[in-house]
Each structure stands twice: as C-alpha cells, then as structure tokens.
Length: 418
Image 1 (tube, rainbow, N blue to C red):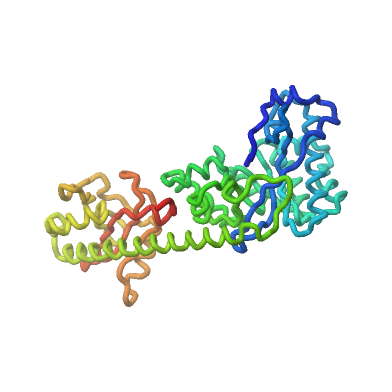
Image 2 (tube, rainbow, N blue to C red):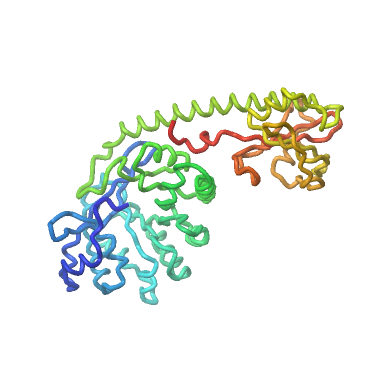
C-alpha cells in the first residue's frame, strides 16, 4: 500500500538521470504488518520512497512499472533498496520479517542457472533468510521458471507470498504450483468486499480455499474499523494499513499497536456475538414455523394445508418457498413460493432431482437417529432472489421430505457497520 503521494514517471525523469549513481536518491520505508494472535508487529513491507522537486517524501512505486525507464536502472534501484533493507534488519533482530516485492518478469531475466541475486544480498547482509518474505507481485512471467526460483527460496529458508490475490483472476494455478506460505488479498477487491454483497461472497469463498491450502492470509490497505472486522472474517492472520500506521522511515516497537488490536478484537467479538445471537433468534423462529408447516402438511394436501396466519408469519420471517421430494431426491410437488399476497405455485422444478445437494445425504443418514429433527444447508445465494439463504430439510409422516428455503442475516457473515 502506498502511503505517500506517488511521484509520476514524468516527474521522476525530470528530477533524476538514469546514471547508476542516481539510484541513490531512492530509499526504503517500512510499513508494519501486525499479527492478530499477539497484536504485535510481526514484520514490515519494504516500500520505495524518493523526494520530489520540493523536497517532499513521495512514493516511488511507479518507477518499477514505467516502461520508458531502462530496466538496468530499475534493477539498480531495486537492489539498492533491498541491500539497505536487509542491512537494517540484520542489525536489529527485534524487527521481525522483511517482505520485499519481486516481479516474475525480472525472474525470467535470470540466467540459465536460475541463481538468485536476492539470496546473495541476504547472505552478504548476514540476515537470517527465515526473516525474509518474497512477494510475487504479478501473474505474468514463466510459471515453470518461477516455480524453480520459489523452490530455491524455500530451500534457503525464505517464505513466499502471492500478492494481489484475486485481482481479476483467481491465481489458483500459482497457489498450486508455487505452494506459497502467505497470500496477500488484492486491496481493491478487499475494500469492495468489506461493504458486503456478492464481492464479499466471492472473497470469503476464496479465503476458504486459501486456508484449505495451508497459507496464511494477509489483508493490506486496512484503513477503517469495518475493514478490520471484515479482515477477521476473511481469516487474516496479518494486517497492514493506515488504521495502524503508514510506511515509516524506521521500524517501531513490536508492541506499539497491541492495545489497539486488543480493543478492536474486543469490539469485533462483542459485535459478532450480538449478531450471532440475533441470528440464533431468527433461526429459532424459522424452525418453529417449519415445524408448524410440517404439522400442517402431514396427512394433508400441500396446497390447502396452510392458514393465512402461517403464510403471513412465514413471509415475515423470510421463508421464501417450500417443496416436497421423495426419498430418492425427486421433487414431487411444485415450488410453493411464499409472497406477501399468499402462496404461488411454480411448476418449473417439478421432477428435478436434488439428491446431489450436500444436505441431502446428511438428511437421509440421520433420519433414524434419536432426537433427529431437521438439517440445514450451508449459506448460499439463491439464484432467483439473489438473497443469502439456507435450505432446511425434514421428513413428513409419509416418508416424503419437506425442504424449505429461508433467507438468513447477511450481517452475521460480513460483520459490517452497526
């Protein structure tokens, strides 16, 4: 995350030449990454800074994406920044890890022996390789060559992160091929998803995959408390951003943000507990209505079993529809859509088979267990209404299966503002 006004490529070209010695006008800044389990600063991301013509410190991040500047010059700047960062961290064992960005395109320029200049710089600085994280910053580059260099990094004791995960593509091929230690979520997607909606569904699904792969999750660009709370929902172990600190010329005491993290996590826990409690109350109402529906349907025809009061209560509680299947999963009734005006029959799904849905085998497996009542699916988004919902299932007396689709509270998932 850039923490200063970026210096444009044109301004950079006006203010310095491309002679090797001009790389000296660039210097490293360090943005802290806090580790949620302890609240301590666990490490820093190295970011490039320079001064504009007025002497103000500005971000130099645009330098590395400027195709008009010679690659050799950009490499000289990059190596200078790494050298200074490695030397700084080698001299201070209490600063945690240092995260540096590496472009796959630059790795593609290495010789056939795939020897890593970064490893040589780390060795020259006498820095423990375990304190270095390499961030793979783009989806370009030769994946086979990238896989080779990442194996070198891992063999040397470095950790590897995939940056901007989810930025326009899944990058799942890189997770599989590179076996990274950390995933940094794309900042723009993270900020959009923190507001809820489908983008939140997508990002939460992606972080579930990341956690299943054994990677740690990093959220960058965290600027507000709501973004912090959503980062927790994403399973992030690390966070960085203005909520804690912009990039600094020097490192900070490891415990600088511990009290802040403790307060934020307490607020998150209180908020989450309130929402889970409200969701549990809503679920209790749904279950009560579903059992009333079951009682009304047992031994009666589905289209004339319900009173207007039950229909009205179901609609207010968010029950969207119900339908009946046989024990093989075949739908043997219409969809009975619950509306403000009453029940509307929808025959589109008559005869469909739902035995492939994950909740169905569970329902069949538990039907003869003592105390068994009903099962509920995981939360999903209904394709017709676009609302988040669950499907509840239970048996009728004739051994047919009653399935009920009901909306759920999305604020329990997203932990947005109260």
